[in-house]
Image (cartoon, rainbow, N blue to C red):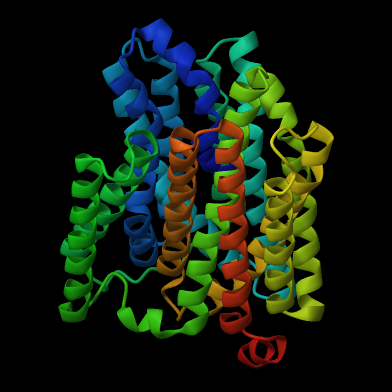
Length: 443
């Protein structure tokens, strides 16, 4: 499960350092380069809820394996692409495979680990993959591009995908199916449109500004599609996302917490990457090395939080992680216009540690609130809000860097916005994450 999730998140960030070389070799226009980067994210974010619903209906192991096969095959097509349209189409198919992988991976872990302590440990290890993959992407991408070429950015997925598929078929038990549950296709189309339009609006806002007509049009259409989805779910006999699930404070609050901490973490990684390259002149490989302190903390923090959860419950861990991450980004914002790199190490470590430390508890909170038969849907909801948070953090960071009179001032403002998001997540966690005694009673 962790191998599949790692591939998905790695492909979000590893392409960033490779796409300039890809553009030169394939003679891509600026629009083509944007689609190579954003097509994957749009398909991934837009189809997550569909992937979760298919997993609940047809079996999460079956859908997960299908997603791994689609993702691995399309990665090979990406590596062999000789022109931009082929590469863009393959990236879109990669995003479809990713949307089938992620909800199933979390649902299968919940199925496999029934004891609360073991489940928290498994969720912690799963969550650490996101931070490691997101932060290691620039480092690994820079290393591959500078040594064996950009095509290996995609070829590296092949052995991982094949091993993941074989191991899943061998060791993961088949999942229950709810074949009688109909797929609500109008609702699925509405949520795909809403998330894809919102992602497109946020990506474009980072380049063109928030008042650009295309951005405002896409945002307005996204709101319209979201409203249509809500109306459809109220009227549907068998809704894709029963709205009464959102009445659960744990589920809805946990989903918003995921949005906020992804906003802070991915906004930090994006703005820090640009800062190190454009302001300090680091190479792609040097930027990856500079971001490594944030990566180094993610595995340790997630495993530690998984072990501590059995003693403390989830609420103290989520609140502590969010406060620590907020302190880290606030420290960067207060460090001055041109701080020495050593002064930025602790803020990056705090953000990486705090985000991963809180991810386990928020994941457990959302998945624990899911009724039987809706684990894939709950996982899809959680990961959809997280993707929206990532896109928003990157878009706001890009806007602040583009519009600030001074580049370093834009970076500091972006870090301050991330710190505020972490603080909001800490307050929400105190209100929405159940204390230990309530979770023990449910268990």
